[in-house]
Image 1 (cartoon, rainbow, N blue to C red):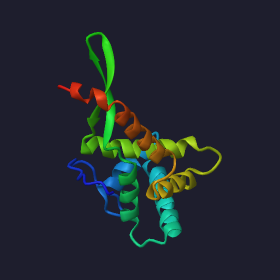
Image 2 (image 1 turned 30 degrees about the vertical axis):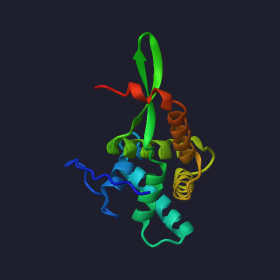
Image 3 (image 1 turned 90 degrees about the vertical axis):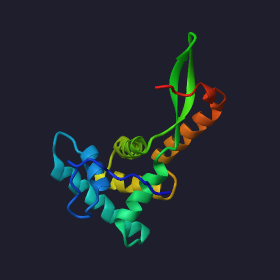
Image 4 (image 1 turned 30 degrees about the horizontal axis):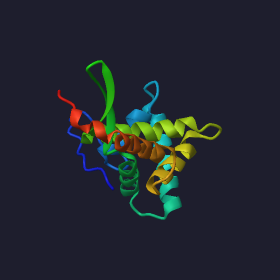
Length: 159
């Protein structure tokens, strides 16, 4: 499953190597303390490793598919009704799907210790592409939680 979200942010420049706004957004989320060049180096090394491992030609396609596999379709939100708090399942907007997928992949890579970041990121992206790994498990847990609380769907979110 790929992401069908176009970045409408006019200030977000596509990344230099792949000309992809999604890759640029990922690099920005990966970045710490404003060090763009370090984040780019980590991302590009990881992408080189991923395409080498999977024997694929288009790294952007692999990256988008990996994020699409991790992106949740439905999630639960807390809703207070009559003194009780219910976990109400609700659909995730396209922008939030992308944000959650990026956040979960980076978080999963950062939580694996003992190896360089580009190797951990490459592992997580490869696992996400193959529909396994920590970030994909998180997506599955989110979906299970929504399924378990389906009885409260009629409360829906009124904004």
